[in-house]
Length: 186
Image 1 (cartoon, rainbow, N blue to C red):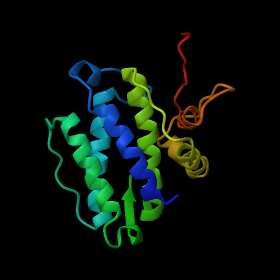
Image 2 (image 1 turned 45 degrees about the vertical axis):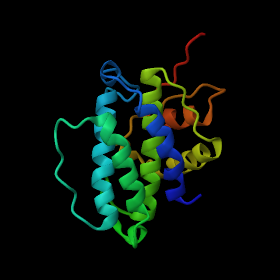
Image 3 (image 1 turned 135 degrees about the vertical axis):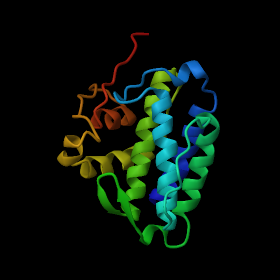
């Protein structure tokens, strides 16, 4: 699957998770040890904004504090989707936090990040989250190859966790990125 198509499948799922969030939910802790929901959204909006500029070959805009994250989220995601489809976007090299990456591969990292943080948000806020199995399988296969020890050493990803024996694809993916999969007994 084209990585841009992956994003096109992920963004509506994320928008559905983010749209109903209230202030109390923004402060909820997530399975991502570094962030509450608000921090995940700041990370995602900031990343989408910076990387949209990079896919267009532009300098990133200044980040503004005090942004309404719930309102900014779908705007930033739509801009990112447009940017990855802009002329020459996948021919560029993106200066990622872990080094220079060909843009066509970096879109796959963005899809990985989106799927995993979607699970973080859903888990923290008690929302259902069922991304398509074929999409998850493709992102999982990419993650198994792309997440190298140096990324874990740089704390971009935690050490992998053990997924339950009957784990779904998304549970396998998040466990690979260092999240503990805990299920309620209900």
